[in-house]
Length: 135
Image (cartoon, rainbow, N blue to C red; front, top):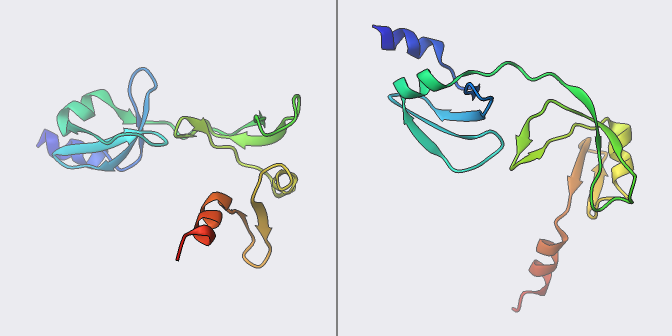
């Protein structure tokens, strides 16, 4: 009965342990499958052990940050927002449309598709390879 109560309390979400290590859950059953927030190897853990170590993480709050990169001039940083969530170890910034438009001349292959109202990055290495393949 206790396990049935735990099952109803654990949902697919972002979890963290007592040290603040955050994970994303893939599947929850007798075994829980998860990976580090933002990517990584899939790990498995018995449900009881998982429930003892991890709790649902609080919803992250957004804060203003400054984004700089090796592809930008020294001392240049653009304003963005971040909730602290990472992908593959890197923070994932959120830009206003105005700031994102300023990224277009700075990021090779970045363009704005007005018809779809989206920003698109073209991978020129793949495009070049597909055009230069032997027939």
